Length: 271
Image (cartoon, rainbow, N blue to C red; front, side, top):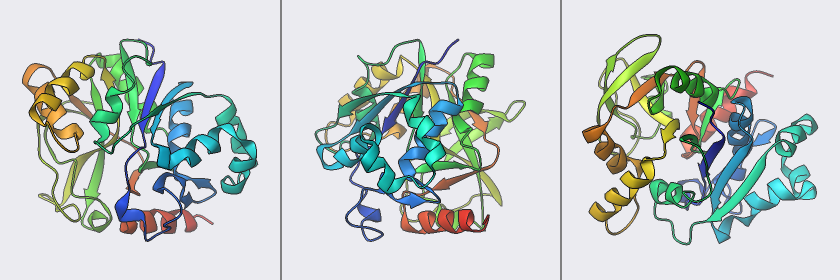
């Protein structure tokens, strides 16, 4: 089962990150020697995937310029060897006219992506040190043939830097695989642990094409405002199996200022 495409929804407003740098979208903020979006592109390539559907908005043309214009890229990419990552990818750009949520953005790619399944990467989640979260999930999907979502471990020491979303009830299976029994709504503030160590979903997944049908059904239920992945996954669990796969390494939530600073400090500690 070959995965040919990755969808990256990157059209959100990113209001929480504006005071970090009001002139740049969060996807272009520097983390180490690369901007945030580069980590998502690297995820695709490390998973052996060369086709990317990048959903942006007119406010975020800088993302398109970064990929298409080497002179722009040189302003943000401090590691020249990473030019190869961009050159090996075929990126299709899609535009979300209003910030209606990540599920709404994913739906825009229905007529672009091909194959029975594809990857989804939320660009404000960084897998360190090797950007191999998606590769891990591709391997899990090839063994199970079932939609699989990345799981990250949250402890008391790091919970302050993780948004209060992604909470799930799970049942252990084997080899770092879990069956997702229920998906819980997003809350406010940082992640509040139910256990000393809790696994939550993060922004990496392999999903089958029927997700587009579930998104349409979820939109009928959530007629106004943002359509997140939570109601979509709730619907899916009524009719099919969803797996979670515990990811090696660490996943950082850089979509909030605390998580972003935590990730930057982590990378700086390497040098």
